[in-house]
Image (cartoon, rainbow, N blue to C red):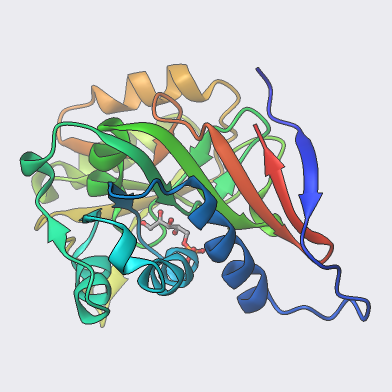
Length: 239
Ligand code: 5RP
């Protein structure tokens, strides 16, 4: 069913000056409602998830631990005393909590701004429910304005970039300190602008088959079941 805002909770900020950081903290705290006692929680990556990890630390005695989608999240979880399990040690997770770079009204997302998309998709796939946490600026009608991250095997980067250019996109290899960024999996990221992704399911299926593509940052087959959107008027829950 299409996603539509269904409820608003939380105190409105009368002055309307709530910061983006506080919006992220709000949804991070709100996500605790989806964590069941005694379970292992799937944990995503990014600045919004960092707020969730901080909130999770306040109930760490009530959960068994986490499966993490990145080295960065693993380090933060462990620093706060939350045990981290390898995804291969766990068959199924009840819930996966992660942010997004864009989310549409169907729960389809673009992810990978933090270069963690491959492990994020793996943990999402082993979870029964995906709860997306984001500030309201991430909600879009059509995916594609945010540069689409695609993790590629370095040998395939040029060919993959040419394929995106044939679709009308502009592709470039993401850099860090003047060199290609290397992901947690030892691969590179191609970022693609200028795409309008009108059929996210078909797009994800097609690009995922290109040789050398490890993961495309469209999450349509692993879409969000619930999205908690941070707004100045409180947290909106979209189903
Ligand atoms: C990392 C991701 C993040 O979920 C996405 O980039 C959103 O991050 P933030 O919460 O910092 O805005 O996909 O690969």
